[in-house]
Length: 461
Image 1: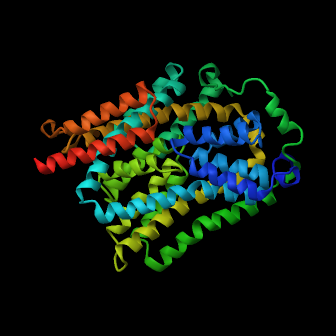
Image 2 (image 1 turned 90 degrees about the horizontal axis):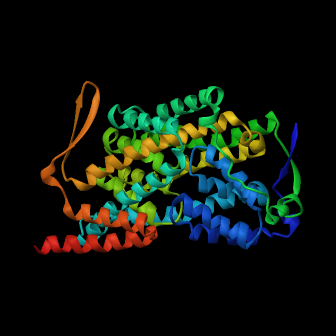
Image 3 (image 1 turned 90 degrees about the vertical axis):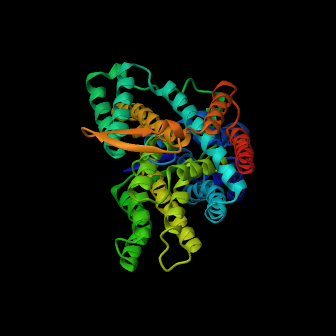
């Protein structure tokens, strides 16, 4: 069966592929500020400035990407690139969106691993750690206001927080449970589990989508096409992993990195903040790749460079391989691990788009999926609260111990090791972000400067 696609082939509508490449480079270079900022940049350039896509179709694509695991802004770029120029357009848009952040974090990872003990570098990351805590709190407030619309959603968020913070239940289990609750809610309590599309009325800009802006071109939605697309992208995803297992053995650090971040790629519903707690706790407590403070430093890198926040995976992988390089040079091992983690994180994103985009209309109109997504988003708020609490105790106190009582985990800070400078930087950053709406880059830059001054003063004292 074929479906009409309002997508590929805008080359026939006067949008040269070279022009699109230059626009995607511009989008990538400006993609700071997390998914909200990145989506806003794409909307401003593609909808308002270039008028290559209308408001309704932009939101249509965004709704689809919000349902998927993975970074929604990168997937939105991939989808619109596919919409404009088919597969090659999606590949270019999605890849360019990741490239600047990958190169930036790779350079910062090398600097961090080699020169972390220098006072200026230590001070930079000391300040950034505290400010990142405020960034997480800001994201928690913003998403909570949107997601927790009624008592059912609040209950799901509280349950998710208790499950992951006190009971240490795995994040994927929480996501699946929330989706099941949403499914049941769509059947028995639709009033509390329905979500509005938020599309509003049709505007003149959207007429472009219905007329000549995007060529009408048939695209298969057959089983044959689905098998071909799945085979290509699943091979690109898993063949490198199988080769590494065969060459290095199942216990090698590169195998652990490849498998762990492959699993992460399919459970990242709700964006990077939602999965950071799961990733941080596994990387710190299970694998021992880095410390809690270093995890915060990595998030600071991702916050202050262009590209998806989930790109922090490459810093985690770099540090893990750098410290367990075996016969390899530590820096070479770290670079290879960075490439591997990035590969297994973003290849699935292209799979979701190229496989699912032709079915987007059906998916978007499905009320059951909408209800499940609503419940998952509420659970994400609880998981983010866990992330904020976990980061807070490790940033504000130099010593934290973990104890278990009747199966419940408690993080108990040593009150005598409180770090006043970190507390002051975190509070000031939170006020700047939430009260005065200052940009994340400005806040991180100011916090880094204060951190350097603090470390120099401590060294002199």
